Length: 331
Image (cartoon, rainbow, N blue to C red):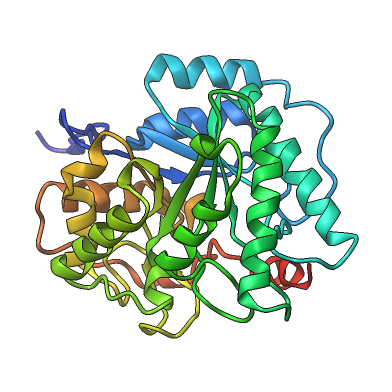
């Protein structure tokens, strides 16, 4: 009929088949926790990572946001789990300089103790930097502080240590160093778990660009630590060169790591029952959260190619904040 405008069928909400891993994204909560939960459901996320407060400040709010209880109920009702809190970028458990060392310990204890108010069962923190004290001293200090935090961690919450890309004086950039931390933790080790960030692995020299390489890293982690402790992975592509010790996140399948290795991780059935795969890809607040969720969904389904991204995808704000990371390294 003349004058009739064809209607575009709305895209159905992305759903994951039975047996799929928990896949989600880090979403901002500046406009409210409940809004983040609803956005997670809208884009098809089945797990979620958030900041509980400003990630570049020591000062923490005395109480959870007013909508925290609604957020917890909503995520439970919609099956969005686990919920992970990413601790402040400023926290450095491997450093000795004061007042940063004391602030780091107190800050992380505060994060794990209030995690239940957010419905969070995981609190993720970077391993930190020895700041010139030497790797072994940094690992020893980190492990002692981890033990302190674990002794204050509520039941049902796990502290999660994230691997580093290896830049500067960072610790925890190799699987062997992560295993060493676990060996040095004296108490409550059952509450300690780990996060592998694929962009950090790539920066540290682990070649994840092939199925064999990606599965090999998981096999090595299993041999040294045990996959039961790999409760979280940050599924990010990288703009950096392999072994560059640099950490620059990219959209899934559009960076140096590429499709094959990321697809192998998504499809590894050993992870499906125990590991949440969370993306920290660019432009989360600019509509690219749904784009990357769909790219993960396609890779899990076996896609060997992904849709081309528009030029603006490579101009959006990056998730990593260099200024924040520089502040963190001082401690």
